[in-house]
Length: 453
Image 1 (tube, rainbow, N blue to C red):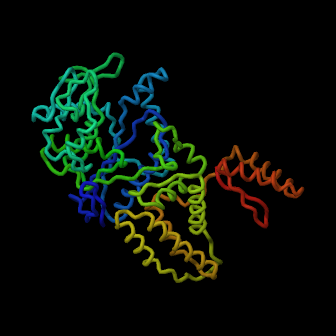
Image 2: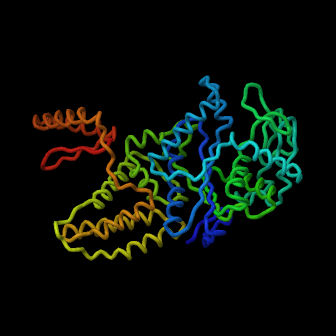
Image 3: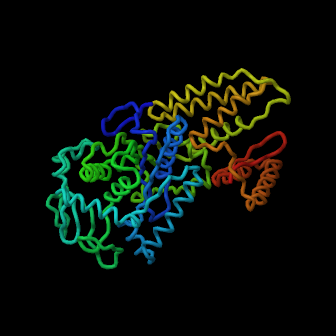
């Protein structure tokens, strides 16, 4: 198995430190509902974890919750509720989202506010070694003390200096230094520390959490490409300086960004599609196939048409997995080992889910041909379910909403009346509007049926 390592910019043979793969992935900052860009990262690393276990590895998976942050404080102030109440609300929303996406929960979800003692311990250790210094109630990391700072993002200190500046009121020794502990401001949440009341900086929490729950060296650390600098670069600086051990991480994995047109999906750009809205419209399997049909290191562009196409692909997989052969049909000649090996070869090559998905659809064609030819495809169907599980696919049709059923049936009846009256444009308008709501109509010889939520 080979994994592309951001640190070395090349694929490397995957050799974990021990029997258990130690895996850390940066998690949510709960100040609003998670969007599809978050879902993409959750799904990719869920698949990495699932596949490692499929290949026989044990995995200990940790994902943090940044439940204190400037964004949380600012949003809470806007709404007029305490920051901890806002953070708890959207942390629970995050858990609801990953459950609906069929993401296997992490083994541990440490929260920044519950890890203050460990965070303070790490900052004290850095200060004692000369890597950190207090200033006006805050504590900063001395970037110049780490000779290989910038190795993950492949930047030099001179490159980082361009455009760097000291904000008004900050007392840094160097503009490139970053904050470990933020001195308290009036009205903000705060904790006691050796440097006075305050709260942790963003970067230090991940170092403290990973050290506490996984140790000094991780096998895999994951996150979006937008976290490479400065967040993950600073994690390396803090962790390796504190422990004196290198590397902090053996394999750095970063997923590309989700795009809407030429822009990435982000709250600052105001182009968000929430996970909840997307699930309501498309379902989990459609979203997974949409994301996994591309490679995790390649940007993917969201359009309604692209996800609808993925949804049709999900239906093909679902139908093939549950299709029934004739009674007492003999088992067909599907060479399952060939499909399984192709799937493994694809996934062993830096988790090439695009090729793995292609293998599934080749298997679906073989299953359909076998059943249409009068034979049983049970072995192929069992393999389809097995391999799909590694990609987190449920192969279940989206559940129909009981409350909506009478209204949809009424619209279907109205559409039939319009078609009978040759008012085809109005009939098509009903189909189109229902499709926009995630309801797909299928006209068959026995009448019209519908799928979706």
